[in-house]
Image (cartoon, rainbow, N blue to C red):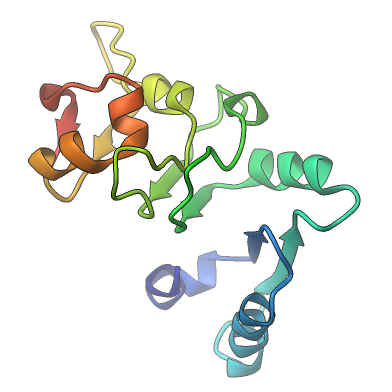
Length: 152
């Protein structure tokens, strides 16, 4: 996320951290970004699973997002694919899964990115290494992704 701010900072208007808990670490990251003064015009906030209206807020921020970064070693999907409008194009970066039992994003979302209508792709799945992703990335394994569907 920091790389995005450094390279595209003027285009970024809002950063929302979604966390299971309002931990001191999450709040500290938000304070640090706000305090740097480099990201003028960009707001930072936290949506936490501890919030009373978490599911509603999560769906709202996901639907509005142009970019979603998932950076956690989760063993269950962080959100339901139905929370995302299928017609809106967005970048989803999932970098936390490194074991077959881990999941960050829904398999349905992965499958949507791989739809091929014969003329154009709805999206693409880019991985650091095809060999590693096929053996380690839980959401890709669960979605039945084949090597030839990935871009290294």
